[in-house]
Length: 106
Image 1 (cartoon, rainbow, N blue to C red):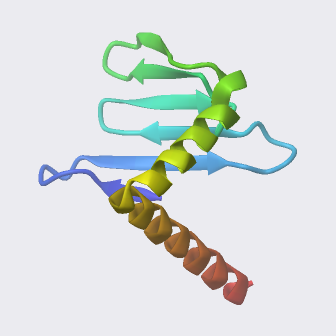
Image 2: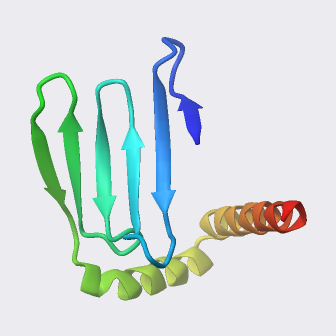
């Protein structure tokens, strides 16, 4: 997937590997570098690679062991806030539409 990021025509590319025999990881590439997120979607670290300098930096946040608890907590909060609940509904509908299109093409 390639996305035009802004009016300067900088681009970002997102690649996602979810196959059983490959590591589950996501890479988001841009004009100044890329971010690699291993163990997607349960990651607690990411690595930023600066293509100009060749330097990299690890970004750590959260704990993958708490991921399910965080998802449940977010889901519960969504039911308490009507606007957030509608956003979850919209995202879910878009996902089902995308999967239905993929299924029809196969």
